[in-house]
Amino acid sequence: MHDEEIQHLINQYLPIEVRAGLPDIRRYSDELLIILHINRPLEDIPLLREQTRRQRMRIAREIERQTGLPVAWGMRSADHEVLFTTRTVPVMTRLGRAERELLDLLVAVGIADTRSSALAYIARAFAYEHREWLAEARLAVGEMARVRARLQLQPRAGPPVVPPEPGDDA
Image (cartoon, rainbow, N blue to C red; front, side, top):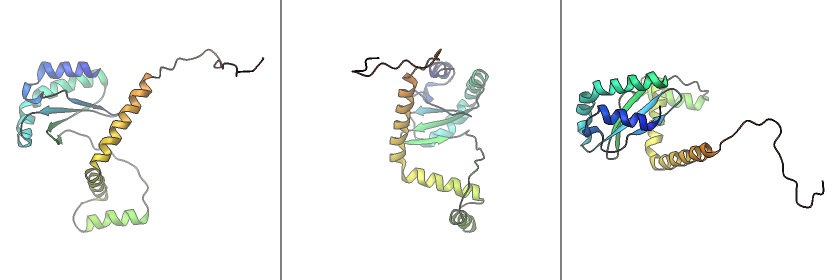
């Protein structure tokens, strides 16, 4: 399912209040995330979330049927983004003693209740502190993906043809 088809479903089923701009559609290997833009205060997001729940579920079922991917939703008001149906997935990592001690300290002082939530807290803190750099990095990665998509590799029936070097008499 292409982004244009998703946009069509959103325009067909969702009210204008949650269509202040084109939605951000982020594709991951295990999930599709749709961020709806609103021209209302951040405080209105819980109300709009509840008002559009049935329609969003209908759209999500159709997308999931066609793509096989679960759909997550969020809303953006100005510079603030709220995600409400994202998945959490276990991630295996190897940490040294110093990193484990830091996670355990965050648990001991009550910032987190598990090592996992402590690591998530650290990731969110890093993302907040470096948000401008991360936005630039995301744009760069998106541009790389666009450039890669232009490269159309075709299967060959043999080795590639290499043009002769200048001055090569063969």
